Image (cartoon, rainbow, N blue to C red):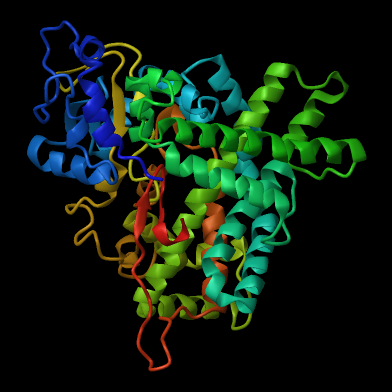
Length: 493
C-alpha cells in the first residue's frame, strides 16, 4: 500500500503546529536568507514540493529565484542548490561545515540510521569511511576489473539464454559485483537464496527511505507509538518493513562470511581483508558493527544505481540505433569482430565513455543528493546559511542545464566528444551524481567501472532493437520512472 503521506501531513499539522513553529524560527541575524517561495504558516513549503519528483519543483524554483533557493521543509531551513559551482563552493571548499546530518534521529527511527549516508559527521562516520577507503579507493578498483569482466561475460550468457528477462539479468549483474567484492560471495543463479534476501531488502529500503517519509517521521515521531486505532497512513507498517529488511541485509551476508572464515574457504573481499588485518586479535565490537553497516550500505548504494543506469542505457540504445551502430563500429575497429573489450581498451574507445557519461546525465539515477547538514551559521554571496539547515543539491537540474547542455532531454553522446571524436574536457560533471565533498560516494570509481564493463561488452555482443508483435508493430513501452532514493523503472516494482 502506498500511503498518502501529504494528506496525512496536512491532517496532523494542526496538532503539531506549535512544535513545528519552534523549529521554523529563523536565525537571529541582520543578513537575509536566499530568495525562495512563500511558505504557508507552520507548514512552510512542504506541501508545495512534488513528493514524487521533487527535482522538478526545485528546477521550477530556479527559474523564479535563482541558483540558491531557500525554503522550509518539515520544519527545517532548507537550501536547494541548482548550480554545480555553488555546490562545490559550499560542499567541497568548506567541507567541515557542510558534512553533517540534520535528520539523523528520524533515519534511526526508520531503521536506516546506521547507513553511512545518514550518520552524522562523527567518529562513527569517519570509521565507516576508513573501512570503505581500504577497499574502494581509486587505486584499488583496478584490481577488481577481472571480477567485473567475469560478471559481464555471465551477463552476456544470461541474455543469450533469455533476452526477454534482460532487466532481471542487469539487476543480477549489479548485485553480483557488490556481493563478490564486498562479501566474497559468488552469485551463480538468479534463484540464489542470499541474492533473494538482499534483493528484497534493497527493494523495500530504496522505495521507502525517501525524504518525504523521513520528514513525516521527523515531524510526527509519536505516530510510531500511537495506538492501532489512530490512522497513520501506513507509517508503522512501512517502518516495520524497512527495519526487518535492514536486519536481513545486515546479518544474512555475514552468516555466510562467518561460515566461510571458519571453513577457511573465504576468498578475498572487503570484509575478509579487514578481518585479516586484525588477525588473531579479532575485530572489536565497534569495528564489527561498523563493518556490517558499511557493507549493507555498499550493497544498497551500489546495486540499485548501477542497475538503473544500465536499464537506462538499454532504453537509450533502442531509441537511438544510430548511436549503437557507431559504437559497434568503433569496437570492431579497436578489438576486432568477435572479441570482447577489456579495460586495456578503454582509452581507445571514447564513444563508449561518451555513451556512459550521457546515460548518467540524461537520466541521473540520484536526481537529488542526500541532504548535507550545516554545522554552523555561514555566509555565501551575502546570504545567511543558518546552522542546522539542510543543503539539497538538485543534480537533475545541473545535468539538464540548457545553457550547458542544449536540448537536455535529448540523448546525445556527442556532447562529450570533440569534432575529431575525442573525449571533451567535461570529464567529471557526470560524476556529480555521486555527490560532493566528504560525503561523496566512496564506491563511485567501482560503480563507474561496472557500468563501463557492461556497456562495452553488451555493445560488442548484441543489437538492441524494439520488440515487435506478430504483425511487426512495436510493443516497446516507455519506462514509467519510479522516484524513490534512486530512479528506477516502475514496471520492475
